Image 1 (cartoon, helix red, strand yellow):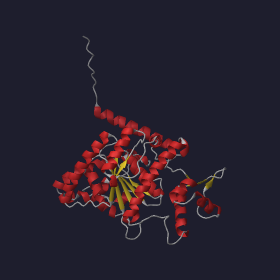
Image 2: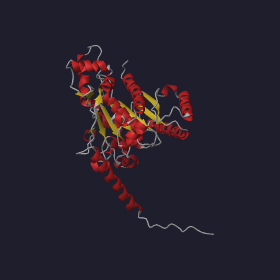
Image 3: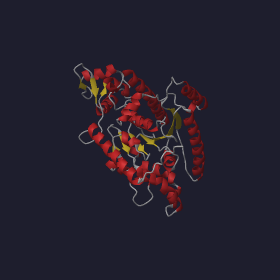
Image 4: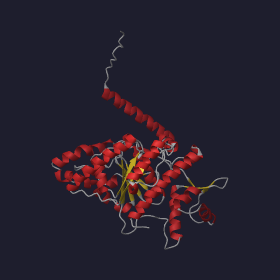
Length: 401
């Protein structure tokens, strides 16, 4: 009887994984420099007049008419007569339309009005791979493109939302929200943590691995010399956001894929919650466990003074393939159970979205020409439908019709 020789390796595991992490980081930075020369900062493409008209809620002919009359910003015009605008010019055009439109029907600038509260939306799921970060990124960018002032907060130590916005945490040395949550004298204002993105109207608080420290420090604070603050940990994000309340209309928080102190603190600060779910049996089972755990924990911290007062929450089906019969059945099952809590639209699975992610881009950033037209338009239609529905919920929370 032949026995396979034993595999004997003398592994210095900690040293090797550190070296491999550094190697990957260096290679990613080289790719970033190649993609965004000369300073590795992300840029944003121009938008066609059709896209601009869609984001502004007017006809393409109206955009053309304004240009021909010399009104609004001057677009770039191709040899074939196609007009394109930068995102900054789209904002200028929005302001122009708002100023020169009917005074009783100003819909072009949807920013908060007097008496309307800051909307804080947490995007959550207990299981990775549900499209949580993709949802948060596209939602934040859509809201900015449609005229809202948006702050994205990456609360996931893995920092995927941060990376999507061109920031490499381990190299760019950005501070995370941990600095505004920590319990010692080193705590900083959230104002010091905010960075602009390549989207006008959209800022971000990046993430890094230090966020994980909050998970360790909170239970220690609750039993140590920071006991009063530790026991009221769930107020820390809402307190931090008060410092920038007047600067934004909407905050979009990408929560970590776990039910820890970061997620609970985010939920306590939220006015709305989007729970992403992939329509597969194992994912739905995982979501069931997540909801049971979340409900139990929220009851406990409610007794300690926490107050989760949501204007709305919705389940969002992500990575959905309508032609997949088991998935279609699962969506039907969820709709039957949670009809009023399900978003009407689903986020379709698309190679356009996944392929854009390979280059750390969203669908709002990539050039349409990189994809088959039907594939791109189908994915974009799905994204805009979901994000438009969420925008309507935000406006309803403000009391708008």
